[in-house]
Image (cartoon, rainbow, N blue to C red):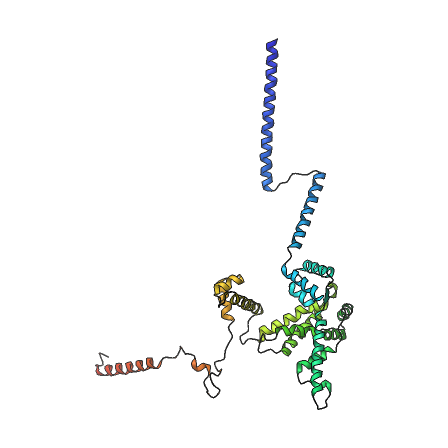
Length: 378
């Protein structure tokens, strides 16, 4: 009996051992399979409570990231806010300089507007700033008139065409945002008078932008730049969409700048350079100036390439096409002397005098020798 009982106990113990071993194997296999699945991107299903908790954690992480990004704000925006607090206002043109690509950075622009509003900084249109400049110019012109003894009409007093133009556009009143919207609605219906009114009210904006491009080309004066900017303003009036909520001056600035830069690219050089290449040349000149200040010497093409983040060959190509053309008829030396630049440039295609003389003598000698030979030898 005891033997039978011992046998049964042994059998039970053996079964338990095998069951434990099987469990261990299953667990090991399950862990291995899970690891493989996790590597492939599989994730186990969570319970409702766990899913809610994971969502909350993700939201907290996102909010922390947002706070971090706000803290790590670019220095240019911080400096801009400090400048705004000192003056009490900022202009729309300055906002566009801080955030150049408005359409791509709408969220950044909205955040900046919120910060300006929180800080109590006013946003003034470039027209209002220009109005003050125009008034100052008018005052100067009127003071000049007062000093003249000969009586004459104030409207025809200034011979300077720029001052006359400034006086003329200074008489046109500025528009409010609501007035711009009503005019834009009328323009949509084909009202030409509304188009003219919106254009005339923003002519000061063109002058304020054109002033920044003076001196970039000897061929284009301030009045030429203003006229080119006016063409851009006409395009802006035609394409303005009031539904997007921005002021007209913010939208028009882009068209005015584009028209002026295009004119500079087309007319400032004898050999036309594409607009995108003109911008690259401007970046190249800025980088060169920075390096000259830092190094105290003319930078090498390799150093300019490292500064601009371009290849050395590309920089050499920019250096080549950025050279100004010079006329060979340019006079050199004193005005009495008739010498021109072309007189000092070597002509590599024409034969040198001593070479041509040597060839002539050689030909003459060969002719004499051939004359002494018999016809068969010749």
